[in-house]
Length: 281
Image 1 (cartoon, rainbow, N blue to C red):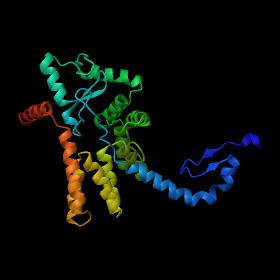
Image 2: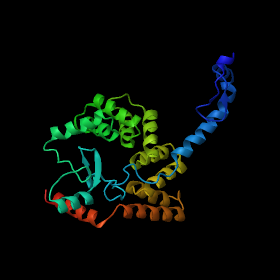
Image 3: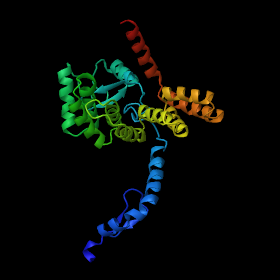
Image 4: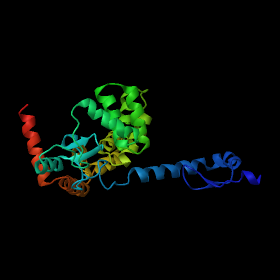
């Protein structure tokens, strides 16, 4: 029937168009093998595309890539923004107060006010705020049901940290039924967004199943955005003969360049203060 005509691409492979629902039902089986092969290629092309940087992005003040170490960045509840330690230190020194360097809001005076501010951003559907509340529920309150609710909303808005945390919950079976396939799905989403921990986990899984070429590719991508654990894994792969000297040297150069890009005099000064404070405890 004419009314039934609606040209739709196959959502898995984009190779064919179905002219109707009946057409899809009748011809899907003969297209299945080719579709699955093409879908796998498209998936890997997306998965193994080198991201321009990590999921953390840049500090909104100095525009340098944010450190992969959470202790070197500060999360502000007022605007749910992450600021590098160097810019926090520089702002505090030049202004003599501890307001947010980005939005200039006064700091929260206690944990209750801090969370109240984050919840205000949650109501505005801010993925960073949703991710923060999900992580709070998961790591500190052990409220897995609340955690998965917040994290799922953040993941639907494209937050890579949320995808990583959900993947971890499925991998461990915490608050959800243990499901390796779902864990891998969320870690792949996170890895595509530049999350090096998720990428490293995918490499470890491929290694476990004997997919060494895929594992190496994952580790190289993570190392290239400055992830130390993946770089160390590649040294072992080199000693075992699973990566060439040229590949290792090229990755080392890119790895070091990524680390250097995260450095500044201000950040070094903030890190020195952090080390002194940690040593004095």
